[in-house]
Amino acid sequence: MLATPTTIAPPTRNLIVDYYDVIAAAAQLCGASAGGEPGTAQFAPGFALPSLDEEVLRFFEAATAVWRELGEHGGHRLQMLDLTQNPGTRTTKTFASMLIVARAVEFIRATGEPVCLFTPTSANKGIALRDAVARAIAAGLVTPEQLSIVVLAPSSTRAKFRHDALAADPVLRKLNPLLSLDSAQPEAVKALGRAFVDEYAKQARDRHGVNLWFSLALNNYLVADAARAAFEADVSPAAGPRWHAHSVSSAFGLLGYNLGREVLEGSGAADVSTRPGFLLVQHLGTPDMVLNLRHGSFSRDYLPTYRANEVTGGWEQDVDAHFPAVTDDPAEVLDPTFYTHAPVTSPAMNNLIGRFGGDGIVVSRRECLQRYPLLREWFAATSVALPQDPAQLREWSLVMALTGVFNAIDRGLVPAGVEIVIHGSGSYTAQDYAPLAPDAEVISTRDIASAIFGGR
Image 1 (cartoon, rainbow, N blue to C red):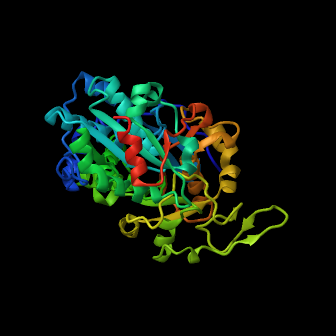
Image 2: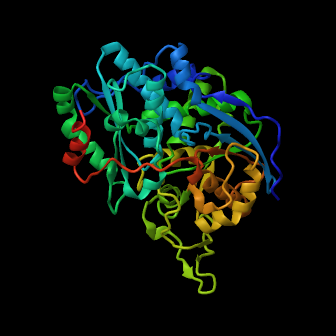
Image 3: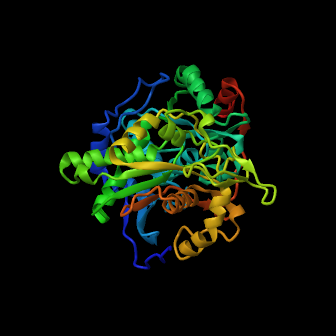
């Protein structure tokens, strides 16, 4: 039975400003440091952050999060860390993107040299970096010529991109192109993006006076997500067994949370005995982390065998509670945000779950739709209200996570007495934005170079 969520005003924090010291400690603990020299393919600024003056505080204004008491399901208390408060992104990628941009600002101030961020992305990392760059310019931290962003995304996620401040101004749009790759393997944007920076970093500096920064690096995200643990310790420290649930592709968020826990435990602000377990939630398109957790392999051979139901038109299985009982397609892509195969982060998450407890579960669109009316009613009075028509949902992370939690509880995968914190990592609808068409279609590093440097 699902209890109605509380109506008491939930605690709110700015995850960057309020926990600047935790972020700095997390960077030191994980050994985060500058990359190669300017003009090299490995260039990355150090992790020094600007002082919190008036302009910087204005830049960080959107880095807020809310801790929500959700209610109860099946005897388990449910809470949510709502990371969707920035209207420019509605995802957790806000926090890392702002820190990445803040580091670029500090480098630019120290050296006077321009930086061009380059990121391959399924969508949300790129959306958030564009938002952060626009906010830095609007706050007066940098000029458009000093800081820019190039995003390379698969064509399969085109509907996720929004017409933003960088697209609204012709000059900014030329300096900050959105590039699209049409490929049968959406994840190919990572290799193509890496190849471009490897090939053109020196030329970018020598001919165009700009330092390319390939920003897709694990530490860039872990350090930001460490603040989640500080927020939890601040407003809802665990009093008993607890799991954290998260829709994941590579689980950067949960690994960052654990880095934050290590910082807190090292300072005596938390005890390792209260470290939670973790519930990984995925979809059938990329169930890799759950497969690896359960079977030690990424092979889809370990998926349960589905049988067609001619009456319902779906596919069904009842041999493994960790996978959808029903789906429209055994290879269904519920949300193309989750596109990573064989993530290198799986061993680390497996070790954490082996040590602290937890599990993994895969959900289908049909299962999400079964829960949807209840979820919509549940969130109606919050800032994450769901649309009446689920076809208008463009980011399924939150609905996936909650569906995974409900299914895991109902199927007996969650031990008795364990409360669950859901990381609300993303939720947005078609009504939240006007779509943005890509500025160029690319298939090669030369195409990317033409799209970027042709406008400079």
